[in-house]
Length: 72
Image (cartoon, rainbow, N blue to C red; front, side, top):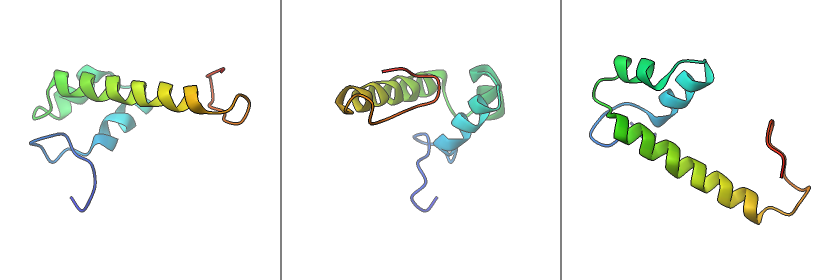
């Protein structure tokens, strides 16, 4: 996939999950469309992404970083 992050043992790009969620689709919709991806892979990815986001926000100087819908 040329450097594109994919779910382990699949050819499904991680970005596809975020595209589904951004469009308002559910995790179940995504899993129905990509049966080679497991629910635990999706949950694990979201948990890790959330932890990384919180870490970035924790180290950002107050008032120096902004995200839509998030106050810090």
